[in-house]
Amino acid sequence: MNAPGDTPGYGGAGSRDERNVAMLAHLSAFAGLVVPLGNVIAPLVIWLLQREKSAFVGDQALESLNFNITVVLAGIACGILVIIGIGLLLWVALGIVWLVGTILGAVRAAEGQYYRHRFILRLVH
Image (tube, rainbow, N blue to C red):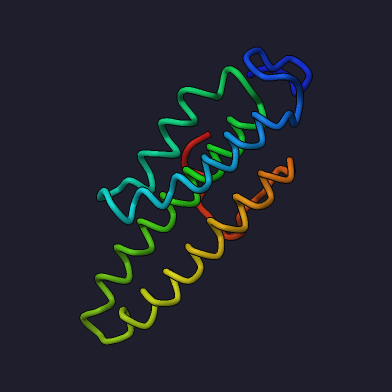
């Protein structure tokens, strides 16, 4: 990965283009509302395409990817827990956490800040 000052393809560390692409990496999770697993596939594609061009974009796309993988796994657990009746309530709570986390990550990335989601599995490094 390139250092923040060495970002070929972008103006420099934290440039407007970098921040926009990092914000898009977080917002791309909304693709999951249209395409099954789109919330994982879209950040993965951005991470694979941009990680060599910008450390900031790569970091934020990876953060979004790990967050959405965690959400998918938690959604599966909620689906299993529907059997005992608590799953629907947990699904609603998970949906709110996902929506707020996605928007918060996008806002922070647009500001040029390295955003970290709390309590997620960091399965992809």
